[in-house]
Amino acid sequence: AAHRIDGRVVAAEIDARTTDDMARLTAAGIVPTLAVVVPTHDEGTAWYVRSIARAGKRLGITCLVDTLHGADAATLAGHLKARSADPAVHGVICQTPLPAGVTLADLGTAIAPVKDVDGANPTSLGLLATGSAEAFAPATAQAVLEILRHEQVPLAGRRVVVVGRSTVVGKPAALLLLAEHATVTVCHSRSTDLPALCREADVLVAAVGRPGLIGVDHVRPGAVVVDVGTNPTPDGGLAGDVDPAVAAVAGALTPVPGGVGPVTTALLHRHTALAAARASGR
Ligand code: NAD
Image (cartoon, rainbow, N blue to C red; front, side):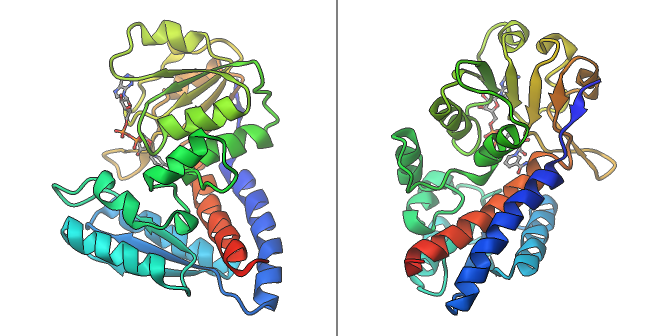
């Protein structure tokens, strides 16, 4: 059976690095602060925001939760700009889902790239594509990399297949994997013969949003499978994009919940501490 990769262990390791930075920042009188803008009422989002705030509190990072349910694009952009301009705020993120008619393209540019700790500004994606060390990658895409690094999965020259091409997960994950010298294939809803493409993967990343889409016939025996999907189940739980039966074939597999999710949260805080350190020159 596949080795079960524990995201909480990876998250704890990232938190330990953040704690080191916090000691330095606190000594200098700096309180890293993350502004979380919540533009709609959504159970899943509310749960996630509470977990961000809880983790922040543990680390000593202040989380300002700005609830602007149903605000229009101009109001939200104005708010994100104001938070970006506030010297007491080091990181700014905007939660999804967005209100009807508002797109991330309307809002991303309102977040200053130096405070864009979840890589929402197209400039951040551009910096990522060009390999700039200044860029913050979207935390979820970065989480995929941190998990593979923690598990010491070799990437240089290996075949990686990313299923999903969204701007927040699939595309930036593919860019980060390319930077590690993997041979990356990106699949999506129009890809033909997805199982055959996926079976070529040494490392398979599923970021689709369809429970159980990735089945046993998608996985080469021994492959490392990272499941980014978070699909609410009728009983109030969470299911990944990967069929649990894949555990019989894969070499290693991230669970949902308890895989990519906790690492994503740890990275948001890590990025916020880094942004605070950069802003203060420490
Ligand atoms: P999205 O809907 O923006 O993109 C989905 C992608 O999947 C698209 O590129 C689409 O082409 C592709 N796709 C759809 N159906 C497909 C099919 N049948 N075969 C192959 N490809 C298909 O979603 P997203 O924002 O990228 O999120 C993906 C998943 O990751 C969701 O379940 C989301 O909840 C989850 N997610 C998790 C975290 C986390 O922290 N764990 C963070 C962000 C997103």
